[in-house]
Every structure is written in C-alpha cells, then in structure tokens.
Amino acid sequence: MFSKYKKPGAGKKPSSRAPALETVAKTPAPTSEPTAAPAPAPAPASRVEMPKPAARKLRAKTDRAPAEVTPIDKERKRKERLMEIKLELHKQLLDNLNLSALESAPEKELRAEIQSIASEVLSEMNVVLNRDERQTLNTELFDEVTGLGPLEPLLKDDTVNDILVNGPKQIFVERDGKLTLTDVTFKDERHLLRIIDKIVSAVGRRVDESNPSVDARLQDGSRFNAMVPPIAVDGSLVSIRKFKKDKLGIDDLVNFGAFNEQMAAYLQAAVATRLNIIVSGGTGSGKTTTLNALSSFIGDSERILTIEDTAELQLQQTHVGRMESRPANVEGKGAVTQRDCLRNALRMRPDRIIVGETRGEEVIDMLQAMNTGHDGSMTTIHANSARDGISRLENMVAMAGIEMPLKAVRSQIASAVNLLVQASRLQDGSRRMVSITEITGMEGDVISMQEVFRYERLGLAPDGKIIGRFNATGVRSHYAERFRQWGYDLPASIFEPMAAE
Ligand SMILES: Nc1ncnc2c1ncn2[C@@H]1O[C@H](COP(=O)(O)OP(=O)(O)OP(=O)(O)O)[C@@H](O)[C@H]1O
Ligand SMILES: [Mg+2]
Image 1 (cartoon, rainbow, N blue to C red):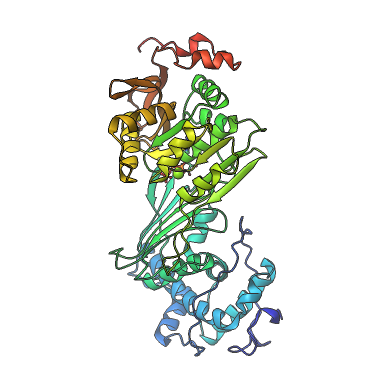
Image 2: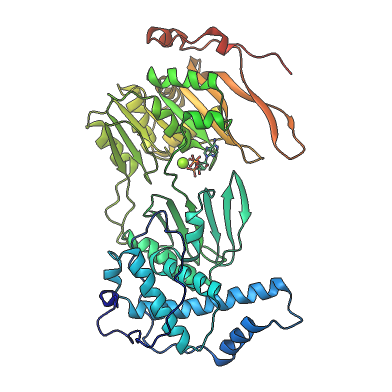
C-alpha cells in the first residue's frame, strides 16, 4: 500500500507479512507542516543489523529492569536505545521512501507508511517495543523525515519563544523571558548537522567548513541561524526565534506590563502624527515586537514598505510591500543588501518605510529617508539606552565610510529622528519599555534629548520579580503642539509624574 511514496525499486518493500500494529500513532497534527526538504544522501541500502546484544538488552528491558539500575538511568538508557533504533530506521526510510512524492503526501498516509516500514524493520531487527515506545518512535520518525527531528516538539510548543542549541547534547529554550535547559538531545553532531543541512538546503543555501554560518527562515516563518564547526568549537550552534502567528498587539503589551496606557496613548499620537521613531534595545528585548505593535497605529490608507534581513514583521494594513535582503550565494554573488532594498524603496513611492533593524551602511539612506519626506518611518537598533542609541547611529554612519564632520552627522540625526523608545529585558525575564525619549534638536555640538516616560524600579519581590512602575518625568512633550494640530489632544495629566512611593 501507499506505493506512490516508495522509491521505484528501492531497498526492500514492506512485505504483507509485516506484523500489523494494533495502534496507530495518535499524535496531534503538527500546527505547521514543514515541507519535506531534500534530505541528505541516503545511506547505502545495506540491511540494518541491530547488534545482537543491544537487541537482546532492549527486549530484556521491556520485561524487567536489573535491580541496580536507578529509574533515571533506566529512562536515559531507554532514550538512548530508542534514539539508536530511530536513526537506523530513519536510514531505512530514506532508502525506501520516495522523497519527492513526500512533499505532496497527506500526513495521514505518510504516517501510516512510516509506521508500516518501521514495524517491518523492527521485526527484522528482532526488536520488541511496547505500545508507548512504538508511538513515540513513529512520531519521532515522522518528525525526522518531514521536520526538524528532536527540535520539532519544541517548535510546536507555543510557550517556547527561542530555541538555542549548543552542540548536540545541550538544547535550551526561552519561556517567559527565562532560559531553561531541556532534556531534548541529538544523537551526535552528525545528527545535528543533518538537520541543519536539511533546513538550509530547503532555502537553497549551504553550510559547511568554508561557509560556516547561515541565516534562514523556516517554513513557518521562524528565524533560524546556525554556525557549524570548526568555527563553533563544541559542536554546531543553532538559534531559532519562533514565529508567533498572533503577534503581540498594543493591548497585549499593555496587559503584559510592557508599558502603560498613558504611554500607549502617547505612542499612538507619535505614530499617527508621523514622527520618526527608533526602537532601541538589547538582543531579544522585544524590539521587533514593539515595532510591529507600533505599526498598528499607521492609517490604512498609507503605503508602507518594510525591509528586513529576515521577514518577521506582520503589518495589518492593506497597502504593504515587504522586502527581504539576501546574502551572497556560495560563489559570493547575488547579495541584495538592506541598503539596496532601501534605495530601491525610495523609488517606490512609499508613505512610510520600516526597516526591521538598522545595523550597517543602510543607516545613511534611512536617515536621508527620514529627513526627506518619509516622515513616520521606523526602525530598530541594538543599544542599551537612548544616548547609546545615538552613539550607535553615529558609529554606523562613520563605519559606512561617510566623511562628514561629527557635528554634521549629529545634526542629520537630530533632524531625522524624533523619538527613541528603549526596550529592555529585565533580570526577572520581563520585557519592558524602560524609557521614551524625545530628540529636541541640537545644543552646540550635542544632540539634546528629553525623557518623557520611564520605568522606575521600586524593589524586588521575594520570588525575584522586579517591582516597579511606569511614570512620566514631568516634562511637556516637545511635540504636544503637533499632536494637538493633528487632532490628538493628549490630556496634560499623562505628562504629570506620580508622587514618589
Ligand atoms: N512585552 C513582552 N512580553 C512578553 N513577551 C514578549 C514581549 N515582547 C516580546 N516578547 C517575546 O520575546 C521574544 C523576543 O522578542 P523580539 O523578537 O521582539 O525581540 P528583539 O529585540 O527584536 O530580538 P532580536 O534582537 O533577536 O531581534 C519574542 O518571542 C516575543 O514574542
Ligand atoms: Mg528583532
């Protein structure tokens, strides 16, 4: 049955004598179904022989456990054995399955096919598994063949934000801003490399010794970065920023305590009246999330162009043009930088330009765009404070090779950028907008700024949570008159600080 997924004449066919399994793996359907990527070259079609002692041990295991083995050891050994069997089976499946037919295979048929081949190979290997083990094995095989193997359950877990792999045996995840070590592992570095290779070859890239790092976007939109040995010293390093289908909106962020309603009202006025905004923050501090949420204040009639290295933004407006830069191919050709996209974007009559993250020479064009009729443009930068953010912009201009006196650079920045929003991941894992700062002009050689809102830390709860509050600093917004003229009459009270606690 399901012979359309068999390679014509490949390996042995599952015989009709294959023992029928009483149970079909009843695993939940994956939320996103990754397309089968070209898999690495199949192993030679030799018959897989499970070493006899190992097979015997496995059978013994299902019957009774030796007295001296602790439950943790037992569990670990059971996992290791299952992992070995899985890898052998995976090789067999690659030999037996017609990979190109896999791409269009309905999930149910594919699962049944995998189950049928697996049960035949298991009986040939003389391996007896209990019902749970067989179910787990079938699910894992399905994940190996169609998805990212051991990472697949983590990708499906909606509470996980980031997945960080440090070599085959150490996989961390981030939940609620906290990193924890998981018990998920790869068999060895080769197994990890095979999954990396599968991901990058699906997007037409290659990663190897001569080209050891790669950025890619997974099928479900997640951001993927990998670096392989020898540059990664202790085994390949992988980071995945999971794609959230439902991006956090302004209301969610207010509910999560990322900022308060007064700040939201202020930000709405700032975006709607087309101030140029930079969201600054450290890595994983919530910059992209904030940028995305801010974009919801842009009117539906405006033409917005977005430029990113990896497309993450999800704008709700109808008139959106999305661009994604592209690194050079293996021959070092074909690169399209963010700067190229930005230059081209200026010819595409945008009302607003949003650059996912400004990190290099595109800063010149971004500042120019902000200065020349594309008011209301937004971007993010990596910096730890508003002042730092300005220095970072200055450095990027200098590194782009523009010979300009510092004062001229600063006055260009001062007239381009209106607002800096500082995002931060605090030590308790919470992500907050710790400061909103307006740029008000130049005083001599220095860019003058005023902080309008800030997060004040008041203490530490016994459970390690930071106690704090958002507060206005008491300065009147530099843009108050502009807001009023555009019909955003913010009450003076939102700029009034609360009494000290
Ligand atoms: N206020 C928040 N509360 C809870 N989770 C948040 C909040 N802001 C962001 N997140 C989550 O934190 C993760 C990182 O957010 P985001 O991608 O916006 O960070 P970033 O600063 O752009 O990171 P990078 O520097 O890697 O680009 C995401 O999974 C996002 O959903
Ligand atoms: Mg980001």
